[in-house]
Length: 472
Image 1 (cartoon, helix red, strand yellow):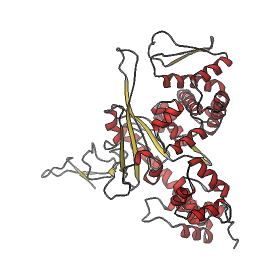
Image 2 (image 1 turned 90 degrees about the horizontal axis):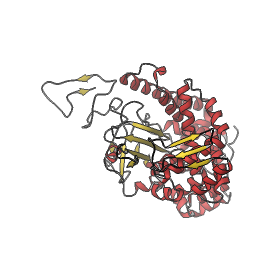
Image 3 (image 1 turned 30 degrees about the horizontal axis):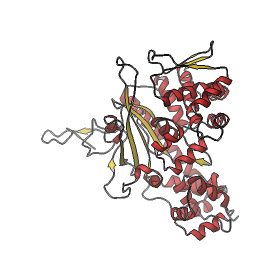
């Protein structure tokens, strides 16, 4: 049998440590090895072992493609990840996965493929359950904005061509600055022959209006500076990256005209965020600041929500950020934005679990709340939520009130400043949450609004709990 290729990754490890701003002692501690051993790895005096590869993928969210591993390494890691699903009683160890790949590579491939199919089938079934419960009876019944939302979810909330194009555009406009300033954006607009102005008073609620014939952009002066700058970036990115946006839209597979138009707007929003928060600069700063949103928004002159949303898009191959989930919830509990690079998935219809901290944050603006939560599959998450208020500019129009939430798995808590002070491993410390009541299997929940859609209820006339039924 052919001996697996030995993997030397000194340059990759040094670059990773530099991006994270870590000393050798800190990285060695994270990997559970000595400083001298790490030094030998970085000098290519010793190859990576299977346990070290597993530690790197878990601790720093690297893929074997990032490390340059051979096909046997990739098979073993894919097998280990699939076998770590909470569906199984206990995860598969690194040595056992490597042995299984050596002895039965085709069987390992089939196991990984079967697990992927199982997860996809589960997601489709969950979507169907939610659709039936909400009155939606067919895929074709989805509204255009739901089609676009699911398209971004399917794309992993990362659009490589747009992200790289916006990053290059930011370098052209901003030079060495972290982010293009408003003055730099206006100067670039002038080179495009674009006039930018703001009326003396707010208009009818529109954030941005562009007259293509006059090449004139009008921004609402009642909006915060971060919003006006974002809308300016949206228009500039839409012009400079028009071909990239058109190509992505043309290959999106969305059938309805409304969905395709909404996708163009969404892609413009994505490009604007990538222009104001260039990928590598933002990712490096996020790691250095341990994802402190306030520090990031000050450095890049963006809003709290914009910084949170951008963190959920850092999924570039070879330079991934921490996998985050992100969502925005309105006063009625509706999820108006959602994305998850973690195993946690949001309800497509209706509201989220009432035990989730984001609902409390809506009622308490400008205060950051944190929570350690555990989903029914046993995975723990650290969440940060903050209530926000966007001014309307007029007494006649109420301000917009909502909350945003950002979170990661507890295994990444060391890199998430909002986890400081939380004991992520303590027994009983996590709040038990679900996706939504219709999909949650928990039986003893004081906040349950209605039973799960796939369970029959049992009513006992002689007794009453917090809810008037049980289910099996």
